Amino acid sequence: MNKTIMAAIRAHALEESPRECCGFVIQAGRRQRYVPVPNSHEQPEEHFRIDGEEWANAEDSGTIIRVIHSHPGDGARPIPSDLDRQQCNNSGVVWGIYAPDCDEYAEITPDEIPLIGRPFILGSHDCWGLIMDWHAMQGVVLNDFRVDYPWWESQYPDNLYFDNWEKEGFIECDPVPGCMVIMQVQSDKWNHAGVLTEEGNLLHHLYGQPSCITPYARGYFRDRTMICVRHKNLPKEIKPWRD
Image (cartoon, rainbow, N blue to C red):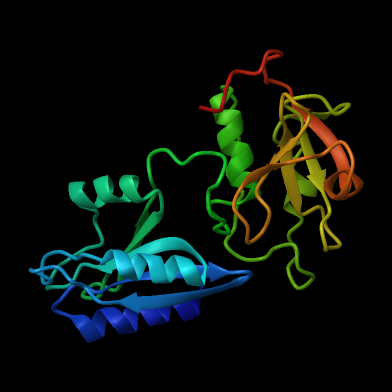
């Protein structure tokens, strides 16, 4: 969560207190912004509700990447209730909770987010997050080196794929299903990666776009592939991972 959005959430929560504030973090292209919306619940001091029209308007302006609400009141903490968790799962979107009294913020993630069609959230639902989740379905646990800033830009020293692929247990190989291909897309660093599917296509999560499957054998992403690797613990037979 960047400082500008966090400041907007904080200001909205303080303005609405003792009522719960609510809103969306919306991404359009590379730009993210906080959009406050009315709390239409009959007991706004204890709960929040966002009307369907507000959801539709938000979706028309970009991708909803977080649903935000506050926990106001003396001693309140950003601890999700059972209802928060249930509704977060139903929405399929990350929820952020801000408690103005203690100035603390926390997030909860839906229990199961499909690999295809998930919104892009840098440091959470991004290309490495997709690769981690796909490998977890195959019984391979990868370390989480995600960060919430554009590390591939020249002002940052990080070079996450180049520095970590071998440490994570990957071995260079020919492109076959289950391999991870690391690419260089509009950057001087290896900054994108995906998994080759059983059909030889590319499962990946490109910056600012929903995760998807893209043809790979010829074209843009094959041309930008720097290395093809496969995890040493990945089974020869890939387990089914799509519903």
